[in-house]
Image (cartoon, rainbow over all chains, first blue to last red; front, side, top):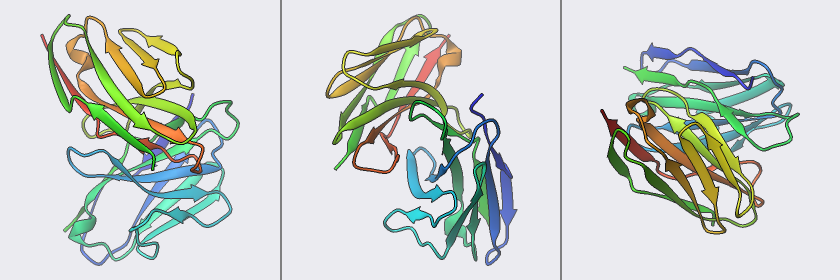
Amino acid sequence: GAVVSQHPSRVICKSGTSVKIECRSLDFQATTMFWYRQFPKQSLMLMATSNEGSKATYEQGVEKDKFLINHASLTLSTLTVTSAHPEDSSFYICSARDSGGAYNEQFFGPGTRLTVL
Amino acid sequence: EDQVTQSPEALRLQEGESSSLNCSYTVSGLRGLFWYRQDPGKGPEFLFTLYSAGEEKEKERLKATLTKKESFLHITAPKPEDSATYLCAVQGSSNTGKLIFGQGTTLQVKP
């Protein structure tokens, strides 16, 4: 149980294009999902909190118009990197919290490696 | 401000050499302290959640303990496959489920 998937696992795109990353909770419902960014040899940096049926909450310094988040169902959240540039190249990881669980564990997806040329 | 500090930054052990990783934290109203394992190029894998001082949890060669100021991840007789980065995170009562992560400890176990 508690499996979170991400798609795609790797994506290479040209500068200026938009890229959509999907995060799915496969065997539980998640009213809240989180998006993180991780640079090489660094820890996870929270970008935003995705809430089902409402607007995402962005961390300070994260451009909400550049990183569009949609949480349309209890099992799916998407992150769209708009007009991507080389500095957006990174490892993006989502996590989901089990809405029906008795505890507060967050379960992470396998990550998406974005490379912008 | 909630804060998590992990030490050491890196740890090299010989196979079978037991050791401990430290996670010091300051948080307003601890709702949970979490340990994750992360392999290169992969997402973090959930290991343990601890909720109150004095609590302990075990899984195979790993044992996590919690006090009011810190948590330890004890590794008993480690094997090369235990090599990974171990991340500690806290969730406080002042935030909406957000996890505050430490910088991680990268463990290398040599055969």
